[in-house]
Length: 429
Ligand SMILES: [Zn+2]
Image 1 (tube, rainbow, N blue to C red):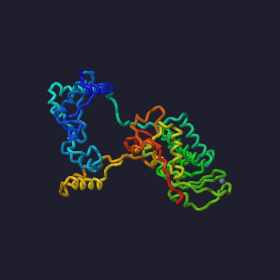
Image 2: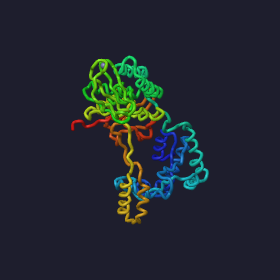
Image 3: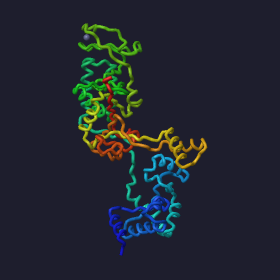
Image 4: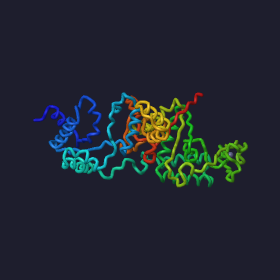
């Protein structure tokens, strides 16, 4: 006959696929509280969990709950936990010993249960659970997955060509035709047309709503971006072009740094005032020397309009396919040094200067907060799920936030999922 508490625990255990127990030192803080009266009581509880597992035919697994690699790294965790203040329940002494234990160490920790049980918990059952997991899981993908929009390649090419002919005539100058050909081959060949298309739609909508859009960053080196209306920067060499008869005249030998430097001139064919254009930026700046770098298109919207632009992406792709890029804030070196000083003050310990530096170094770079990128929106293809790329969360756990963010820092999935930088700037100044 089970005791009441054990029966209740057994009932709850039915929900789980396997049960976990940890080495006795991991529970050191429980012994300080009211719930567990001492080491004998703790062993009794662990013994009952193992028994429940046997009764329910669920594997019981010994886990180490490691928080750092080696024993001697414990001091860094103590310093970091101390920095969070006494309100944190973790911050109660004695802090448990939670280094990464080897199999031998784990067997040793469970030897009090008898060698057979120790082996079952530490070796046999860990393999049972590991075998449940598909062997080919990779936390981060190795390819770029862009959203698919039907007909996007053809439509993009058409948009580019229509403007090209409007500006440079029915028969395109060789320099223009070559540049377009090179860019389209690379953009369409790598599946990047969809990125341009999204940028096009955002710019179009903002302009229609009465807000001009600036672009910055490398997008200015793409003629296809110019011709499709994403940017006003024309990366061709300095040149004149006629708005009336499409006459053009290029300067390819470095005579002028930019089209803006050209003197005013009238069209030799029809007498209209010529447009001066061209900033001579190679396409390689944008897509890398092999034309395969994932393009970074930064669009700069009016600060007032930025939330609208963000929301428009959500409307285009759906609530479950657009997420804010998550960021991870880490402990900076100066902050870590402050933590070490506070630890010395709070514990009455005194370290030498070199030791303070060493401890500060060890606590630097640890995750401190999560946040969201101010502008980056990640777009998940319609046939995929955000969880193919990253877990998600609300920024700083605020469930009322308008946007969910990726849990992974976006830098770590930058090459797998499309990110649009939709910036806002204060243009009222
Ligand atoms: Zn003309």
